[in-house]
Structures are given as structure tokens and as C-alpha cells.
Image (tube, rainbow, N blue to C red; front, side, top):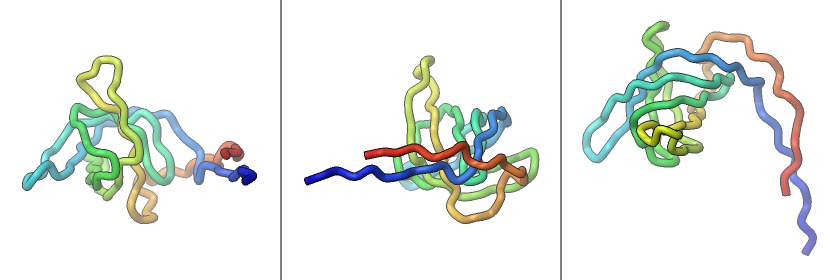
Length: 114
């Protein structure tokens, strides 16, 4: 059987920007809030550092106190940071709203995967 290549590309460009956020997700029967800080923004999500340990695939609520806005997202990727007290989370927005109210640059090309 021959394996073909699949072309994948990002849907928007990325911007490195740090801003404080609050993340909320359900742990058992309760919801818990965690302070977070963005590292990378995109039109469709972000990468954040936070003290909580959300599960892969978990639904997260992102609150931007500076703008007074919130949006739902899901955890696509997570890893323990060097300090091991924090997690890096890649979050994808659920819905199509431009949460950041930023005009993003175009995505930087495509890459092939097999």
C-alpha cells in the first residue's frame, strides 16, 4: 500500500503577544478559574501558559478582562513547561468570531505530511 502526502496549512498567521487571560474549565462537578498568559495568538485560537492542567480535548472558557469578552475553546495540545508548575496549552476557538479583534497576517505557506 502506498502512503500519500497530505497538504496541511495553517488557517491564519501567528502573532507573538503576551496578555493576561482567565481560563475556566470543569473539574469534576465544579468549574475552576486559572490565571493564564498568552504567548501566541491566531485568528482561530492561541497558545497560553497557565497553572492549571486541563485535559486534552477539554472545553475551556477564555475570558479577556481587558476587553470584557469571553469565548469557548478546546484544548488541542498540552505540555508541562520547564518550571513544571505550569502548562502550555494550545487552544482552538469553538465558533468563528474574531475574538482578538485583530487583522492577522496570511498563513505562512503549506507543509506536507504523510
